Amino acid sequence: MKLSLIIHAITIACASAFAPISPAKTPYSSALTMTWRDDNIVTLVPKFKIKEGKKEQYMKVLPKFLEKVKANEEDTCVFYGFVGPNENDEVICREGYVSAEGLLAHLANVDEELKEALENADITELYIQGPPAELEKLKEPLAAFNPTYYPLHPGSFRSTKN
Image 1 (tube, rainbow, N blue to C red):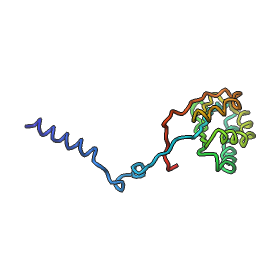
Image 2 (spheres, rainbow, N blue to C red):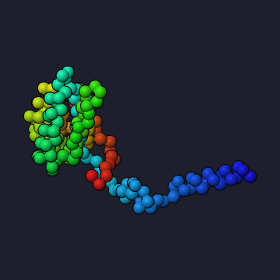
Image 3 (cartoon, rainbow, N blue to C red):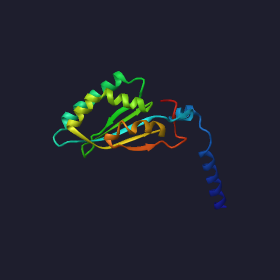
Image 4 (cartoon, rainbow, N blue to C red):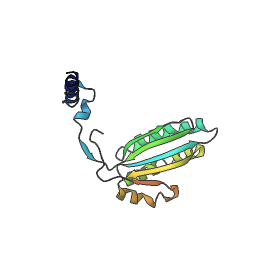
């Protein structure tokens, strides 16, 4: 008798776990109505290692990058921001562009700020991710940076909400 009650309880618990939830009753209601599109974003992920004694100077450059991007890259920049520094004085910039051309336009736009940042930090890693055709457009102009390229897997997607 007890075994049948346990099985019955498990059946009810499993069934209720997969029962539809009204979007109005969950904090994740927007995820339930989300639609998707192909991901064609080209991302650039440089990791900076701040030089000894240069943290204050380096951190003063970051707002300059943000202001310049916000003022000039509305049509080409999808997202842009910095994370860190961590306990090893490393900072990562998270950047996304609509195309390889957008990424190259960004580098031209922030050339002055990048030079100033590199007086106070070194780029220790540089990753570029995106559709293979877009990555090909970047290999020659960015060869001096020796980046690691990661081609986007076919079928990758992103939300239409952003």
